[in-house]
Image 1: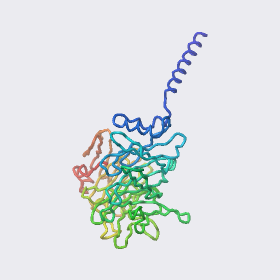
Image 2 (image 1 turned 180 degrees about the vertical axis):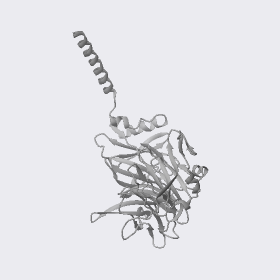
Image 3 (image 1 turned 135 degrees about the vertical axis):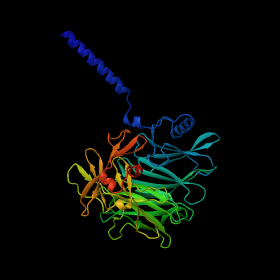
Length: 446
C-alpha cells in the first residue's frame, strides 16, 4: 500500500514539474499577439528604429486592424520623391495609453530617423494616404481609438514635410471624432475630399451627420452643410462609391433594433451641401431602405450601378408554429440623383443570411409566395400564397450543405466551392411555373 502511495506521489510530482515547465515557456497574451520581428530587408529598418528610440528602450509595435495597411511598419512615398519612407507605430512600456508615430527616411542606403510624434489614442485603427490638395504629395489620414472604447474614434490628417536640408515637420490639418470615413472626389472637381460620418449629442439625443472635408488654404475645412442621417444608426458597416457625373456614396448602417438601412449620399453642387434623400429630416429616420437581413449594398448584376437591399413590404406572414420563422422577400432597388428619394425595384430574392446564399425570383412571384425557415433543421420551404395571404401548397425546398453533400432525394442542385443547395420541386411548384433548371440557375452564393 505504501509503495502504491509513493508511486502516485512521484507521478504527481512529475506531472507538476512538466506543467511548471510548460508554463514557464508560455508567453503572455500580449507577447503572443505582438507582431513578429521583421527580417530580411526590414531587419535594417528595425535596427535603425531601435537605435533611434534609444538603446534598451522597451516598446511594443502596434499595427492597424483596418484598411489597406496592416503592418506596424508602413512603407509609402510620403514626400513625393519616388522613394518610400517608413512609418512605425509603437508604444513605450509604461505608456501604453499613447501610440507614437515614428518616421524614418532612407538616405544613402541607410535608414535615418527624422520624426517621432505622439499619437491621438492607445490604438491605431487605420492608415491611409491621399493627395487632398493636388500638390503631388499625399497627406496621411490616421484613425485612432482608446482600448476598450473602439466605438469612439478620432480621425487626424497630417502633412509630413521631409526637406533635403533642415528639420522635418509634422503638421496637423484636421482632428475630429468620427464613426466612418472614405476618400472620394464627391464634387467631381478633380481633387479628393474626405467623406466623414459622425455623431453629436444635442439635448441628450444623438444626432448622426455626414460631412465633406475639403482642403482649403493650409488646412482641411468643413465643405458645405452636412447631411442629417438616421438618428438610430449606431454602426456604419460599409461604404461603397459609385462613379459618374454625380458620384454617389452608399453607406450601410445598423439600427438599434437589429435592422439595417442604407444611407445614400451625393453632393448638391447648386446648394453646396450633401444630400441624404432617404433620411426624413423631420423624424430623423430612414424607413425607405430598412431590412431585417444582414445584407450589404452590392452591384448584384455587375453593371456598375449598386442595388440597395430592403425588406419587401408585401411579403412575409406569421408562422403557425414555434419551429418555423417567416422569411420576408428582399427587393433590390436602384436610385439616382435625377429622382432623389425614389427606389426603382430591379430584382427580388429569398436570402438565407445564415447559410449565405440567395435565390433570385422574377417580379411576378413577389406577391404569390411565402417562405418559412425551420429553426431546427435550417431548411427553407417556399409555399404558394392564397388570395387572402394564407399559406398554400409547398412549391419547393432549399437545403444547404457546407460539405458539398446533398439531400438523398432532390430534383435540383446548385454548388460552388464545396457548398451546395439542393431541393425538391413539387407538382404545385411546376404548376406555378418553376422548373428545376430555373431554380438551380437562380441560386447565388455569397
